[in-house]
Length: 218
Image (cartoon, rainbow, N blue to C red):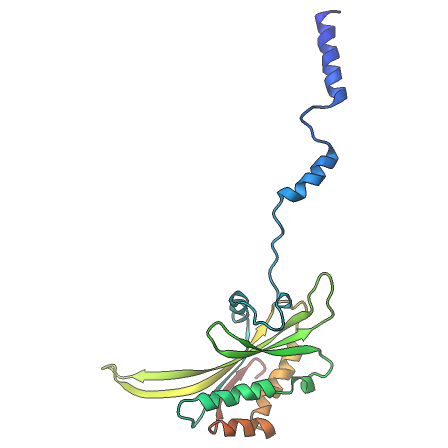
């Protein structure tokens, strides 16, 4: 056998048997999942339990969303605690179900990272493998704020305390715009402040009165 024929035979045998460094196809498919990191997915409001408030990171996202409503209240209460309680009581007792009887939703009291009490209204939908059960919502929060005006010497000229209520749109989990539902809730919420039970609740908290109102549908 000549030298050239011997080299040709060895080369043919190598390709016929396959490279000893090539893994079988099945081996590659089996090993890859263990080598890749797990997929990173954004946490939605449906991932949190009903008994716990969403973590601070979720609230940071919520409050960056669009403001739907802002109301400033004045009051006669000295420290504002009774007035704030009255505004929060009105928010918790508001009949959301009566405003949108065909829209399923939940409303739960939650605590914001700054300690303020809030009410989280969540629109619901049928849960699927791709989507959670929550379809966005509205976050209502109220707190005491102050306005301070000082003269040139830094002396306090005027000090006014007021209550500010804000409603933010919750976009987390929302796949379809809820503008119609949001509008009906906000308009009814504002109207209820000066009628019937709402006006009674505010008066009992130290003659709480609406000073100013802003919402998207003015």
